[in-house]
Amino acid sequence: MTFRSETTTTRPTLEGTFGMTASTHWLATGSAQAVLERGGNAFDAAVAGAFVLHVVEPHLNGPGGDMTGVFVTAQEPRRPVVLMGQGPAPAGATIEHFRAEGLDAVPGAGALAAAVPGAVDAWLLLLQEHGAWELADVLAFAIDYAERGHHVLASVAETIDSASALFRTDWPSSADLWLENGQAPEPGSLIRNPEYAQVLRELVAAGDGEPTREERIAAARREWRTGRVARSIADFIRTPHRHSDGGLHAGVLTAADMADWAAGFEDALTLDFRGYTIAKTGPWGQGPVLLQVLAILDGFDDAHLDPGTELGAHTVLEALKLALADRDTYYGDSGSATALTPEALAVLLSPEYAAERRALIGENASHEFRPGTIPGVDPVSPPLRTEAEFGAAGGLGIGEPTVPKPAEPTPEARAAVRGDTCHIDVVDRWGNMVSATPSGGWLQSSPAVPGLGFCLGTRLQMMWLDQNSPSRLEPGTRPRTTLSPTLVLRDGEPVMALGTPGGDQQDQWQLLLLLRLLVGELDPQAAIDAPALHTTAMPGSFYPRTWEPAGAVVEDRLGEDVIIGLERRGHRVTRAGDWALGRLSCVIRDPETGVLRAAANPRGMQGYAAGR
Image 1: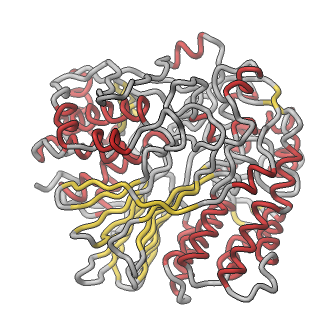
Image 2: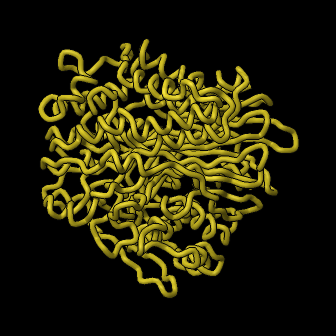
């Protein structure tokens, strides 16, 4: 069945046989493609592009943040591997400590919400184990943009401006880094970050004298975890500073926390759908949501799977609500005593369980929170609080709204209103393929650390201050991250890497893309251009953790008839505009012919694909 689509696309789907890159910023895409052109492989290219993203999209990710990736190598193309760059809660991040600080939730902004930074070590690990280039050559692009400058995006300038009052009054180190004469930069002006360039130069210098490329990169990893960066962070955040709850708190991350943790590799979690194998992170991330939804939808005919129709949009929204309810009831890090066992996870992904959940989808929208039942597992549902209820309690909504809401008239609430995420996909001519989603450490997350050119992330806001929760705050365990890249295989061979920023929407928007590609047989660019939608009928993963029963957000291009039909079925629809939802990208490889393809999101006017 071919889904309906527009007759023209915003851009062409790229085709070639040499190499393809797609990302959320053209400079990262261009840098990664330049690596491929000079003989580097997909992993060299992805790492180069990722460090450029730190520089050019600092409102969406940073060195103090985290990342997850999923990849295959040309040597082992049938084994999808997760690159795990999600740092855990520090030793001092206990429920008791947060309660003693007068908190009933982890703040959405401020260093008390910082997990151990995971992104830099993860990218260096990928380069060390699977790259071919020297670290100095890979980092040269990011160092150049940080030292010589790059033209600042309007969205970066707007984010700095929105946080400028907080910077001036409470976070002076951020004001020193991002404001000039007390003002945000003008869109299109040249901005620099020499402090971060120096950090990168020090990582390169740490390997001087080491005999091999791998040992030089290993030395850089040690420097990151134990050197000036770790000491500067630990020293700086001891001083209390303003957080999103309005209070003054000190951070708890220490140099020992940084030294004791390292990124790693894990086997991907997989599910078969319509002749394809979908590879995701485990339930320490939200990756299994996509697998659960696909298992539910697999039992419907194709007419139920077209998101561009009333029936398809309704079915997709209802299936998503069911899987997300399971996410918020059962998912968590395997290191937690309350987390899912492998046996319980197998139940969630089983055909029998999917059939039970599928039977709950009726003609009308559910207004209930409906997790399933796993034998032998006690469900622990999160608090269900609407945004109106949160506002009535006097809270400030600061977290990671992918679709920004009007800011509260306070400096704290104007900060962090546009925190989001980045994404990059790369495939090379040898068949190496990687999809990665870096995030956190947004410039508005917490005060910039003097001398480093970046701040810490706030991923701990995704953990609950509830001893019974499977995603409870617990030292040494990973927050249940939303970062969720995807790899697709056919007959055991990798054929597609894709992903998007978007917090709770990441797997929702990727679901639309997969349905349109794998079932609807759309051209990749047409599938990305097609109107998007998502549900908000689940507790948000980011502060203030609110939900909207039966909430659905849609692009107006979905069509008046479809939107009215959804409202008639009981969905509480919010119209987001014509081009507002999703920042998807993908790269594709045909194992039989070696033909490569790529496409990228036109929304926001900054994501691009490149290749030949």
